[in-house]
Image 1 (spheres, rainbow, N blue to C red):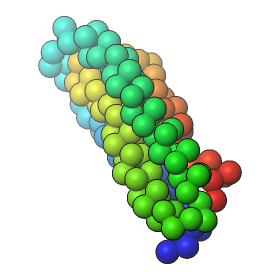
Image 2: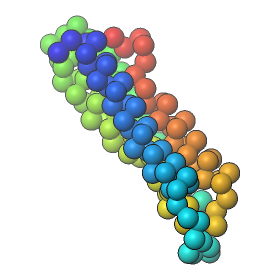
Image 3: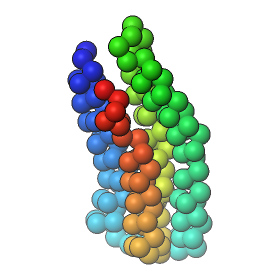
Length: 138
């Protein structure tokens, strides 16, 4: 597979990760009835969403090292394996980056305000932007 095809597949995967991260939050904010089943969980869920950002720190470090290794492996026999390791590392990191939005989706059923829910979604979006493949690689 050519380098351009791999980059295209990784770019498509990034958009899929974005959809899977923000989709549940957007759908629940739009169509879910705000039942406020457990209003006492609003603040703990918001704090848990913010704390979940720190899950991405070791994941980003692994992604950064995989990115550097892929850059060094370009035009060598190890290039294909380096791209696979990069894709696997980014997939795991994207799951970690999705945690704030997913916790926000759970918090829709509490009395957490819309502003806080949007902040949790934006947190996931910004972290996911860190996992785009840079143009210099390829």
